[in-house]
Image: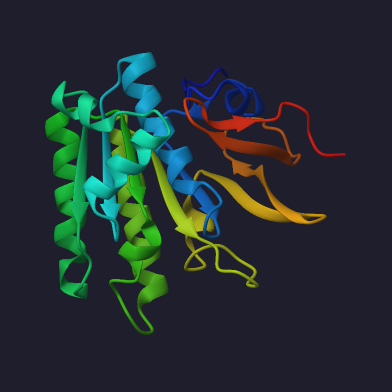
Length: 233
């Protein structure tokens, strides 16, 4: 049965996904520092507004909205202009107390409903989940992603969550998100002789076939994520 897909607007990534992300799903963008998680997630939202006329909501934890917009502008993506045009919204959230977890989640979902956003980015789910410190962090992360999944699917909103993969540690994020998310795209920095290079792989994507190979990619002004179309051998 054919499924409805949401294109990322990154042509070579959409090819790896056989046309795009299944609509209404949650895709985890996992990687270590400097791998390009924020750029990939932001480009997905930006392309949605510019190329496909879909409103978006970008939720920031840890980084300020103005800092984010300045960084994106250096890559040629003018988020401030799209905000003024009402094509997307940037929501800056703080995570200082466990008690704000439910309120923060409600705020995000309310903004999706009110704005009619069809694309959502939460950057990062690691920061939000770590609002809960101690032995409950894993269960709270599971509940968080599960609730998002159910509500956002009913709203027809397709979501990217970024999560940190610490250096020298196996696994993704808090250790449970990968089992709940519909898809996982992993970004890495790998040594190549005297330098590091970036590579991408689609670890999981429910309801659709996808490439299982590694692909190198670069980040450049005007293009953002640029995937080398030939897999590593």
